[in-house]
Image (cartoon, rainbow over all chains, first blue to last red; front, top):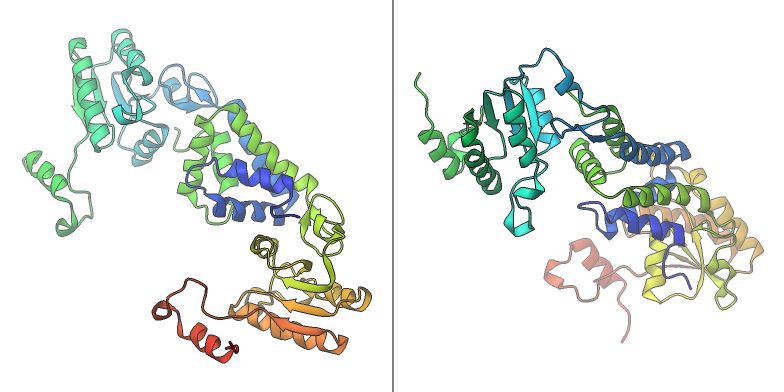
Length: 200
Length: 200
């Protein structure tokens, strides 16, 4: 009669397929792993899922994900409060922090403009960004959205909106990545890299 | 200060990397998805994980995963109790059930012999299989382990152990898959397919 796994297994597989990039087969493999694993591991995973939803919120200043408000960066007295780096998501913020190249504050848009996916200016934290520029005495905004079509369009749009605020607007440099090999770099990157060349 | 995500996010990522095939990057992507998703989805997933560990056990007869003991197949009066199909895992059982080609009972080994991974006869449900042959009046055992090196070795080993029980021992046919194209089939499969040819 059983053309399917027992109900609870079936339900777990179904819940797992809601995760991005997880199809039926992967979900089934993950479910079997959880079934074979220890009770502690399963409980640890379930607890971590619940905890993240309970404890993590958006920082009311920069809209990064945080377990305290304001977040540790916004609160840090050693950060330069005159320079604001605009990123699309928390992962990008993290990558910039890891690079160690930035000691100012951040603003997390929570996405990029994407007409095709129905993401317009009102879906991003743009109003909040403009409000910060007015209120916080910021002198430079670095637009650090991805060098993709959407990221570039978002940066262009933001620059237009920010211009009246009379702060310096910059865009992260796009060019040949360090350690890269010219012959394998795409043409758009190469032409950007020539266009944005700097004196030595 | 924050070179990492907030603690709860970090913990979720760490728990997710314990799943097979999930590295740091995938775990981070999954965690972000859970964070962005609804509370209901997160709770649904957590509940499904806990429920599966609570409710799913091994059937005491066939060692398939089940939420009732004996499982629905072992309990089903319409199944032929004289023929036993030996598989390595619940997924294989499910695949055979879906094929609709078998109406007997199953025995789930829970693995295959694999000296390299330290899986010996005592790690599989072989003792239980031999006991069933003695007690349940079984007349045929179909060895349906995978046609892989380990699966074949396991089938050979089982055949040796079962032989004294004086039941019929068969092995699932290995050959050209239906819909397959001879020119793309590997040589071992082709030679097996010739070797095991049947009269028309």
